[in-house]
Length: 335
Ligand code: BTN
Image 1 (cartoon, rainbow, N blue to C red):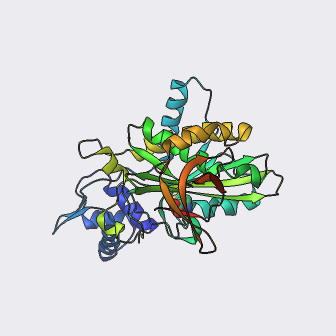
Image 2: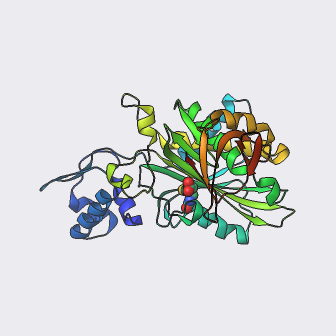
Image 3: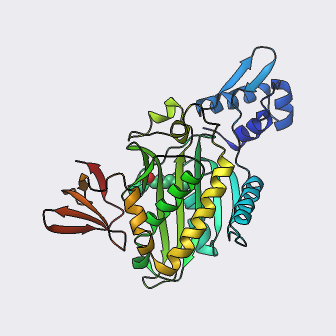
């Protein structure tokens, strides 16, 4: 596991130059043996490091670290390009946290987290839907959460995770990544392999207002070792982009995601999910396909995907009959 110390060392090595163990030890105030151990842990977390006996260490592929300032600069560029005045989002980056969503949920008990975006290089307890863990690798994933306040209550927010999927797909497309699709309720997929996920949590009264924390996890460049720990077939953005493409720049991508999210959330607050339903269906990997739903009580339902309704419920057709399903606890499988 990468510790904050690991990150300080990696930041020293981020220039891609050779650094002696002695110099590194002096900079971070550790012994050389401890530096060696911390860097071994970094390798285990998926970073490609070269050790040259008697000379030191060099990062073979310098991770482009998340950088709040770089994200802000890019966000402002995007805003200027679209003629808007500003994106009402403040960006924070941390090396390590248990989960960006858990952290914003904790903060939301004490203060308003509307417009606060928190991205982490490393989550020690990343959470997925249905109580699952979310696996990410330092430097090879993009994990962030965004706080957003809505005047309405939970019923109005039923389609929010689908609208967020639209925002993420738009952002990836705007960054030149093609063939990205959505899988109900809120997975991002490419050729039916999971590329990312969305986790929405909320606090508030049934009638509103609601304070939501929108968590997004994307696989940017997953080493083979990390894929083994993930229980579903996965892919990453580097694969989607193709071998000839330039490496994915995570700061640039995060700025694009925040810009698209702010615009989608703003519209959602006014009009709900309805304006996104047609686009969502168009992006659905299973539109018109026969699927099997696994319900929370263990039952399964099979039918043909007719689409989603204005509240974000999945509509399955079984002959002339239509059935609606609306729950974050349902899983969809290809039948
Ligand atoms: C899923 O597909 O199960 C949803 C995954 C959501 C993962 C993101 S990563 C950032 C944020 N922090 C978390 O702990 N989870 C979400």
